[in-house]
Amino acid sequence: MNTTMEVARKLVALCKEGRFDECSNTLLADDVVSVEAAAPPGMEREARGLEAVRRKGEWWGSNHEVHSFSVSGPWPHDNRFVVGFQFDVTFKPTGQRMKLDEVALYTVRDGKVAREEFFYDTSGA
Image (cartoon, rainbow, N blue to C red):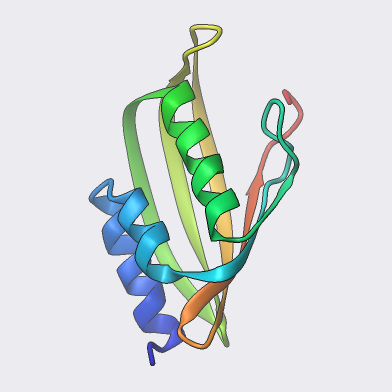
C-alpha cells in the first residue's frame, strides 16, 4: 500500500510531466470525490466517482489551451497533502487568456486519493 507521501510525490511528479490522465488513472480511488471552489460551466462543484472526475478533466483539457504551467509541493499533513498549481491558459470558448493560481488539498485513504479539493480565487467566476 502506498503511504500518503508516496502518493503525494507520485502525483506531483506526474503533474510536472503533464501526465494528468495517468495521475487520475493510477492514483485516484474509484469512489473519489473532487470539489471545485466554483462550479465549471454547466457542471456541479462536486464530482463523485472516478468516471465523473475523468469527465471533468476531459472538459478542462478540451476547453483550455495551456501555454505553461508549474507545480509545487507536496506539503504533507497526516493523511493529507497540498500541491500548488500555476497555469497560463486561454479559455477556448471566449479566447480569454488568464493566469490561474490554485492549491489542491488531497486526502489519501488506502493508498489512493479519496478526496481532492481545489482552492482558487472565485471573484471572477
